[in-house]
Length: 226
Image: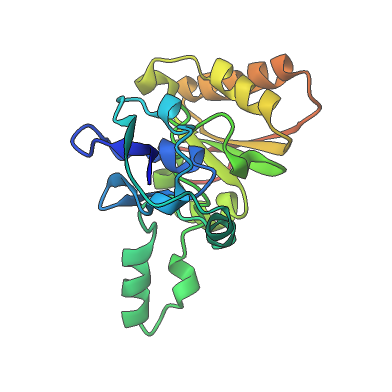
């Protein structure tokens, strides 16, 4: 049948994964760093993915395509969601070859993709009833056990106000307002510029008019929790 369906220009696609989260039918996946429509019958052609694409790589075209199948979509959405590459896969392989370590020692706790504050969609389903970790992007390099100690079951967002030169409070405030957030944990470095990250979260929480608990953890430059 001839109908409207998503078309993705892989040459333009930057692999951010925002369209994967925006598609409520699971019709788009990241494959080898590029967004791809995996099945015509998963795509309803409504284009929820279009407005989130930062590089305008997605359009709607009218062409011969299989009819949208709601039942197949429901079954597909019951499967675990994987929105990006395979975080920690190389470490898993390494763990299997090292008899002194268990695989769990190398298991990534990352629950979603993307993780950058400026790239993450505001209305992603993983924000509902979530505990959020807002972390300085260098904190994971400073603290050796960052994944296991801080990430856990949290949705992880990272950023650096000095490098990004952007105001995070507005974006975070939108996330806090639009979703049912249980708690927010900030993991920052002891350096002064990281105060901007902590302050942005506090401003966003204040502007959200919601009672969301906040915990701030500071990491020293030598990797210890202060």
